[in-house]
Length: 264
Image (cartoon, rainbow, N blue to C red):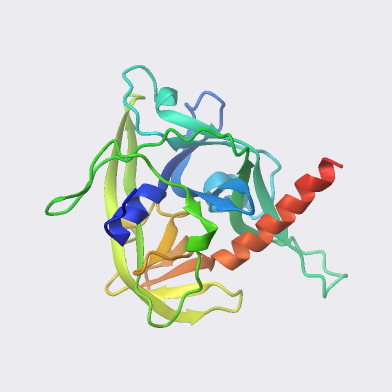
C-alpha cells in the first residue's frame, strides 16, 4: 500500500478503543487509543495502562481485576455496540520495584504501559473512518495497518512529531458512536525526564478536552518514524509525555521470554 503522508500513516495505524467492565461491551469505563505492532515475530496490541486499567490508577494500586478492551473495527452495525468492536484479551501490566531499597514497604509505582501478545493468525478486520480538513486526507473504509519494528526510531531534537486520534467520545443509543477527530502536530523535544520519557513541547496552549482519548496513541516523527506512545498531557506548560518505544520493547522482551518459559 502506498502511503502518501505521515497524516495518512498515523491515521491508518492508530486504533480507537473502548474499555468495559463486562464481556458484552456494555458497561463502558472509558475510551482511549492503541496500535498493533509487529516485533520479534510476534503481534502485539499496545495501549497506555491507565486506559486499560483506569481503576488501578485511580486507586494507585493494582486491584487485580482485568477489564475488557475492545478495538473499534469501524464496520457498520444497526443492532448493538459489540458488533462494532473486536475484543483484545490477555493484556500485560507492570509494576516498578525499587530494588535498591529492600526495606521499603511503599506501594510500587505502576508502569503506564500495557500490551497483549496476540497469535500471528489473529485477524484484524479494522477499517478507517474518515479524516479530513479542507479535503479528505483518508477516506472511510480503508484497511488499517500494523506497525513494523523497522519503523521505530529514537527521537532527535530536529524532529517534529504528530499525534492523531479521536476525542470527545460518546455512545448514543448504545449503537451510534460520536467522536471528534484530532490532529496535533509540530511537537518538538523539550527534554528527557528522569524516567527516560520524552517531554514534547506543543506549539500553543493545550486544551485538555481536545486530547482526552489520545492516551495510547502512537507518536510519529515527520519522517513517519514511530518514536513512542503518548501517556499524558500537561496543560499548564503545554507539554506532552511520551514513553519511548525502547521502554516498551524492553517489556515485550520480558513477555516473550516469559511466554517461552511456559511452553517448556
